[in-house]
Image (tube, rainbow, N blue to C red; front, side, top):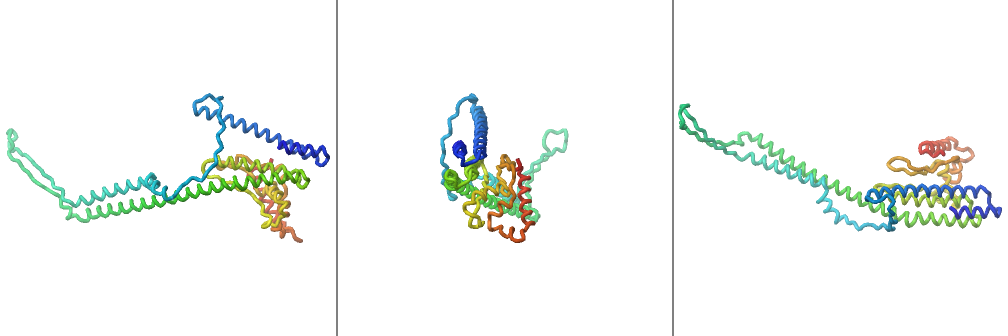
Length: 345
């Protein structure tokens, strides 16, 4: 940004550009310095908190972490499958449930076996006498076959409970395998997104910035195009770096105009993307845990007409009889976006 400000000042002194370009560049440079100070403050707070967690002095220096190149982990469903089935708590609980129901079934089956009992009883006819007058002994046992419905029902109930427990185990295993497949797919998708941003999107943004810089120096591009490409590059790098540091699901939505499909001139690609944002049709914001933490505010939102007229796919709205109703509806969408996401500065 300081380079942009210096070039703008040089062109202004040469009389090829206005003072407004210099002021905009200086303002952007000042904003970056302010953001730098805020980031330094946040870094200091995080370092102090990290030192406190490690029971160290708050002012103890922390070395810069070494740069790590993320690699796709070597994960095989064939290796993970037996580990998952052997250690997942839900599966272990289902297996314990089967053992319990089998034990109950065995008890129900053992109830069919007669249970003998031995009884011995001593009696005295003369209460004053010390000796036992009569000694009775007897053997008794249950006859479960007489009440076969009761004991049969208990066995059938035990068998059904075992079957239900086995089905529950099967469902737990299938659910665990579904989650395994889902997590493996998420890992592959996250790695793909990382490679996409690292190897394509960010390098393309850097190329766009360099192309706009050269075009601006040769007078083929406006100052706004150059400064916008520089801002977009830094903003994209910051957003991707921040998203990669957040555990769990991350979602990055990038608005990329398609000259061929949209019917816009290739040289207007950056302009079309910028007007989508500045009209409010494409809100530019960051959200964490369902709450917006930062947004690109609009001082003077441009009419959606400026965005629509650059694309042949909307040419039917501006014919001999303009479709004012549809244009107003699109303008309403932009207005609601500005209101909902708080884009008005």
